[in-house]
Length: 380
Image (cartoon, rainbow, N blue to C red; front, top):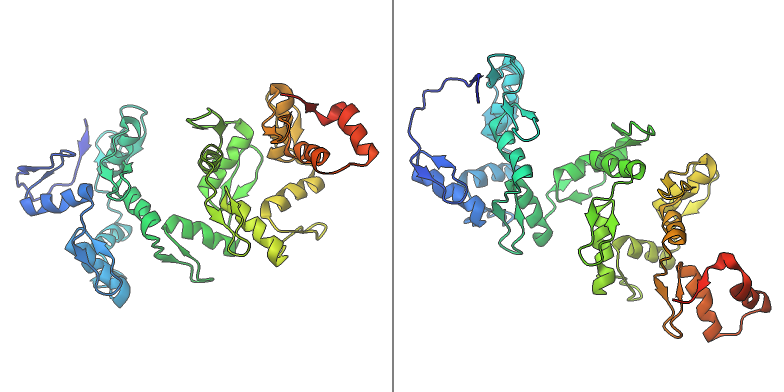
């Protein structure tokens, strides 16, 4: 990098030890051995209090401070103490104003991505970011084999296997596997919503929620099902959709034994047993068992219709209504009668149709099935 000045250091040692996986170099063989554990996942140092394992002994030493409350690293300027030396090192520039990396020409962030031009103040963040473009994933889970471009992502991923949730809310006691999830959760108590949509002005407690919300306006659906090609705006929705192909229903009610494709469906189902309706409309007072139902209901009062058909421009208050509407254009009829094989565009139409086989319907409903064009009663 041209015109880049780094702080001078007295360490002029060579780095003859090279990692054969990622190419990083070290001045001592011991440092190389420790580094290789980040690739292999080997964790030979164990906490005798909680059993958590670490690849480096110094990390274990720092971890133990969580249990003991010890903060041995103290700032000699303000007296604030830290459990890790690295945290103290990051803290000190707040007093000195020191910025160890600077550009001789403009004084700004010296590390630039040569692909997209994004700039960084530190080399570590710059190196990690470049892997987004290259697709390089050096860190592998030794349980399921999944790979990651950043070691911290691997650490977070491993908690899906171990069930570890080390981040706890001081207000309600709920635990989380990632610190960012805790930060977003705390805002549910404080009411803070710092992320604002520049299109409609709606505010959110988390940046990820804002990103997902914006897709309502843009229509972006970056997640594709590799089996049927269907597109989704959320990765979680794609994962739930895959269960349609596999038939898997991993979420089971511990009261009646009924199983569901999605955890949200199980949560809603349980309210049938408890009768609980925790979500209340602040305008009319109506109660709902699901927050999503309350959100859709509020649009009756506000008149908001954020879901737009990209074919005819018609707008809807709920995404499910838009999905049903689009079948008018596509002719899709995904709901099939197991008895006679007829197909329908909506699940409700199928449920009404099945009654023909199971019971005698009143005359007016038979007439509806035969004559009402709005019913969309069609054969495949």
